[in-house]
Each structure stands twice: as structure tokens, then as C-alpha cells.
Image (cartoon, rainbow, N blue to C red; front, side):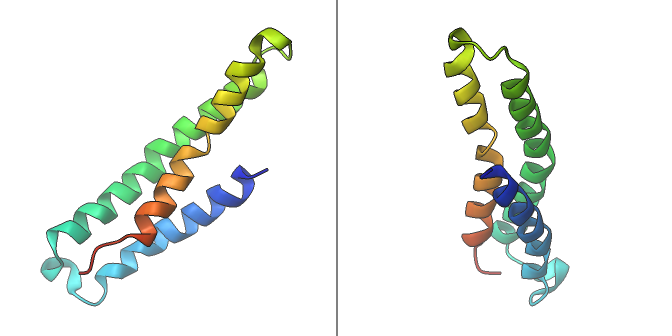
Amino acid sequence: MLGSVLAPSAGLLGAMSVMATDGCGPDDCSQALTTAVILIHGTLFVGGFLATGAWLTSWLLPWTRRWSVLRAWLAGLSLLPPVLVLVMVFTLPAG
């Protein structure tokens, strides 16, 4: 439920993070800003696969008491990449 809100907003804001370089041009931006934008896009790409895999695994594990703790941890782990992207977007350095 929470992932259905976090993932699209992280994808949208992460894709819009490139606009932070509009004011300084692609060649004149600070190294910190360009590194942050590259990290955001890398986290969107790799984190999307990791979050999907963790979420899918949490649903495919048997629904017994034995696996309930691991299912809860995997479901929580699937929320980390979108949250990390949102934190990086909201703390972009100045260009």
C-alpha cells in the first residue's frame, strides 16, 4: 500500500531531478550536483529491481507463521529504494 504511493512519486521526482542542472548548464554545474543526479538515477534503476524482487519474494513465500518475520522484513526492505530516492531529491546540493 505504501509502496504504491512512494514508488511513483520517487520515479517522477527522480526523473525531474535532472532539471536541477538547467540553471547552470550541463558543463558548469558543481560536481556535487552532478554526482547526486547520477546517484538518483542509479538508485532508481537498480533500486527498482531490488524493490520489486524483495516485494515479490515477500508475497511468494509461504503464508505460514514460520515465514512471517522474513516476509515482513522483505516487505519493509522493498520500501527503502523509493525512500532513499526521495531523500536524495529533497536534499540536492546547490548547482
